[in-house]
Image (cartoon, rainbow, N blue to C red):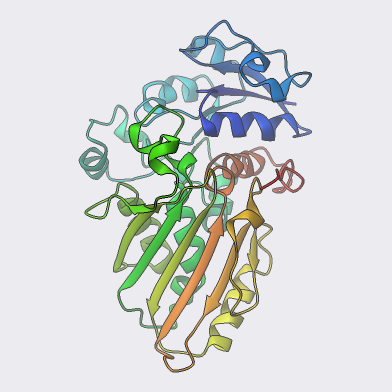
Length: 344
């Protein structure tokens, strides 16, 4: 069994990690931390785990955590980087579900996240944890930067086009929507029920911190700079995400569909739907699957519309972290994830 430590076990991604690890045949939660709930039983706070775990939340302790085989940080940005070097030196692998290691440029990270990076030398060592792009590197990694939810959806919608390098791409528009859980579990005015329900809004339109991450991962796939505008929106639902991608590119829908079918034929968590279908977020609720569908107007062959749908908490966070963990420890990639869906 692989002994897993979870730092930050009471947020939405932490709860999702608990759910997934509890069903995983090769993982054992050896340590789970929460500064606010230290001393309380996990199943006292989350009764749905009664009979599944008898763990008690602990204060974060690097010595105790270093005894784990792998530590997953489900914490706000700026936390994981404070302890990662010590854990790596102790022989422990690390997966950060936050943004501390996603950007390779420390100055750019500081620009977007408003704080100095605690260990900029580790940015070059961290592997970006999008298995569909970096599978081999993840399998050898000691430090994995789990992708953000929006970058995951956008990248999966665009990878085949970018990697093929068969097309001259114009300015791409990423029009993205997420459920309220993407804002985290902390109490915030804008995500209170009466504020978010029966409403719909854009946010971060003048600049969102997922933009440099999107530019970086798309640039890696293309081997050059990608011209893209990204605007996220808040949708009054708990979980789910859709990226609607508008791409100026010449070609037939049949040609694009064949390209995507070939690229994703062996990907266990990417489901290419028939051209013209409209995937729904409820179809992936609680699962690590990604749904992708292609559209093209009969009168505009120079425009492709790509719909990419994921669960922001699973494929966009905790499920992807378990997928990466499986690769890092030599387990079959789908282990603990195929039957882990919850009701919509």
